[in-house]
Picture 1 (cartoon, one colour):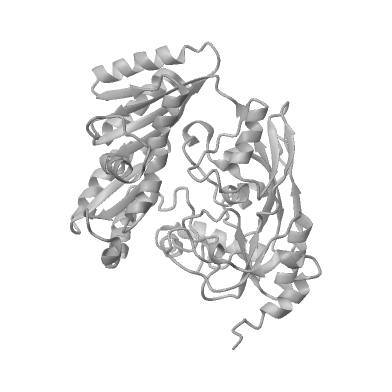
Picture 2 (cartoon, one colour):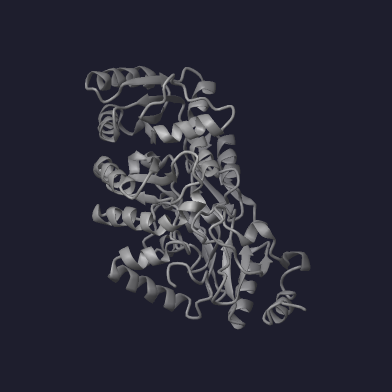
Length: 472
């Protein structure tokens, strides 16, 4: 018996006018399940247009038939925003993976124009070829695509110096829900001609349209770099160390990453070829990365600042990279923590942010509240410079996370309630997607939510763009 939904045949017929048969196919497994396996989508079609005009035609056809459109880039999102909803509005997946050209590289103007399907690491490599830097750096940079980083306003490890994705975009080209094309690929630093639709679309998670290309700002590449893994007494000392280094070294700090002992132990036990360079695993440590221009004396200044930090008992020990290979080895420890976490399997993951000055108190209160629920372990790591923590809760050693599923909503509420008390955000860098719709309704500012609904209704009155994201 054929279980194909009735709406697929007329849609496929209409799409044949603009897309080749190979670009309208049944969704395979990678499109139907988000990376953590939290939900599986209903069977649908995957559409892979190859140009902005084809995206526009496709959206117009879907709008006429009242079919929802779920944008898909690299599929690395962790809140289900790229996964077609299992219930509700009939929807297709529109993937930008075949729109993967770098249209322009303007080295004099330090701008790169990339289509939404370009892999992030390819943008980084293209910038490097002209001795420039595209500084957005994520664990998934070898597979995530520019469209996804724009849709979620991706952050990563270099936000402290360069800002989020939004801070690095000069213009966007996008297709709106009625199929009209926004021709906004300007390379201007100044343009005060009314509402800035670029910033409205960035971070909207595909709910207001499909970004098809962007003009990206490039930065000077640091000539001198220095990296150290520094053990600290506790998170309060880590925050104080950050302030000390900022006062001493200014904007040379590129990244400042906090890690705890549980994360180190997961890497040691589950990731081959990555060594934590301390005989005993530290309770807390920070990975500090710095960059400066030529003849800045960065290494000497960093070592002097570290000695002062030791005297103030803000730092306990350090491994200072003496070569690029050692620098890469230190970064491998930090970059392996999410991989090791996935092997172990968290009961509940939290991508949250609080004011930088509140990080230590938040961790102390959250640890006490979570561990008061039972025999649980907490792995906290993240970007101290921008207050973004990945606060993950695990069962005791030898226990299976699935047997603790009943605790997941309880843990999440405890953590998110506390984040709200600290005037933080329960969706710091991964977005809202479908997983945090209820959280947005609970913790979001009512006036902001009303404005978001009004904008959504005005631009997308049929609700076809990524239905189920932000709003149920």
